[in-house]
Image (cartoon, rainbow, N blue to C red; front, top):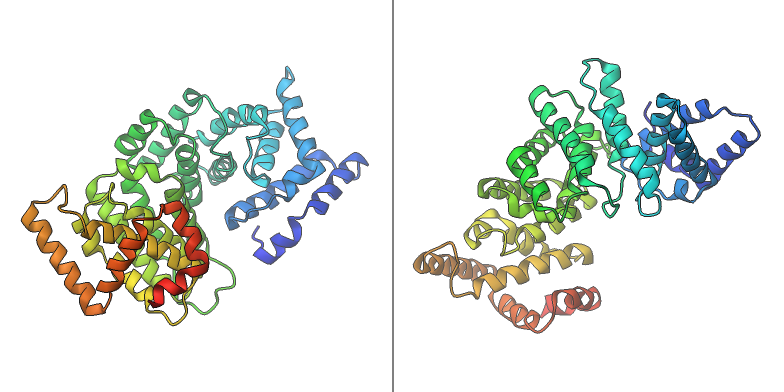
Length: 394
């Protein structure tokens, strides 16, 4: 079943969930039928990547939480009902976990067991997809014993890499669940890059998805599944920036060039994608991650200069561009690049200054660098919110 964003928005309301809860109280609707209906709504919500707190705030939230705990405590559990309840609860919820550790401790092993099913049937494929879509909603701050799920989610990802048994959205969800759970753990980082090959996989997925999207199409009211998946991958990259340091240099360069290309392809047709790309580029051009020579050749600076020359400046976009520019100006003012010989670095410096001079931005870069040297990165973002027009026009 597929629903439009408008249809989903009309359904995902607190009063609708409260009505379902009342119907359950009055026995006008069975729990089994309610679960079937809500799984369908939750699935459509996840596929469309819609964020909603309405279920969290409804009386149905508490009912389902209680049912999950109640079913788990039974000596003879109804496994199918428990799985359905967990999937409903997680897919309709956002940021699950902070207030419900008990639900998470029940749901994770239950749904990972479903996701580990390797039967080759369309029904199994759909069940696995549903379980992984539910798991991706567990908030990154939720405490989970790592040993309870690292081996399982690793097995799921590796099996897909060998057999291609998952749907694209299920595969992305598996990565999201893993990456957002393990931000501070060195063991996880090594497994994610050295064994699961995160850099290689995310680049391949993005390349394949982008090849399936017509960004210039006329009908843009409803986003395609491929567009939504690209955004989901980019958001995970932004959220899990610590993994950039684990990528191979060649992979990182390829990712930088890919995001730059995505930005150019979507600049005039998808504002949210444009904003997401430029925010990610600000992270990718951090001098602690990649060498100066790579940044100078990637086309990122060209994007910034193009934005500065736009007749109308958008605050959100320009703030990220100024972040890139400030980083790059700091690079150009260094004595040398740690990865290059002094003469080679001097050549790059001269080349970039000449390019800036041709564009008429050399004075701006110098003054901008001098200004930002006195302001912390956290403060200057707030300053530019009201005064960036002044800085641009001087």
